[in-house]
Length: 294
Image 1 (cartoon, rainbow, N blue to C red):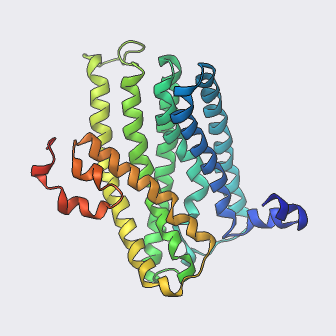
Image 2: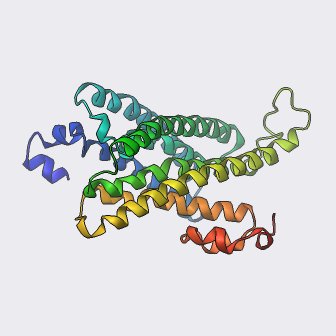
Image 3: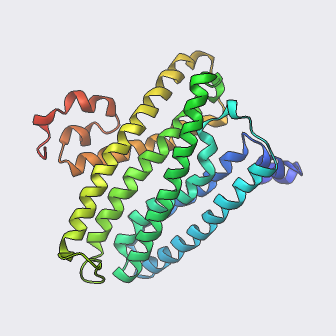
């Protein structure tokens, strides 16, 4: 991509302001978030304590950068290019995705940090996860109205329908992870106490229960968007050539799959955990009797 921008002057500006290609600028930051998450999973067990500090610094640098992206790139979209409401796609929410993944990063990193550093990470993660999900909900209203009044997107754009699966999936995943991190970092009641709470020791358990209940509700929303996208994509598969939108076949569905597995773990439901990628079989193969937690 750098070679393209060098050989063809002006294409970088055009790419960032193009109403179709520009949205995918956010995927650069999503890739960075994935790299940091994997560094936490594979690096910390095989490295020194310096990496814990490095990841903490990286987390806050990423948070600042993606906040600026979320503000200024939408400003570019508001002023440089006027989008047509009848062409709305879930991809319009992509610029807020990197900021929303602050929650996912917090859920991955906070458990490795001392309590005094884990708490602000979790607060930031919850804040940005809420920002991303709220903006996605606003976008869903426009998107759903477009589907009802204009119909499905053109064939080449139908893979982008899977992007709608991402916000509720990653929010469910982040909420479960951050609630677990509160207990892992021993924040309550060892480090801090909340005013008005009689039994501080119950806070981690309550947060994990609340996160699970919320995650299940969000999972159903992700499931509906996934199903709509699958039906639309299958109907157009014979007419659909490769397009930039094919990126959406992967990233949102990864979050959906992992969220399914995490919910299965929390419910002690082997059917959900084993059939996470084939989520469609979960309801039929996992009745109330097969979930030991229910």
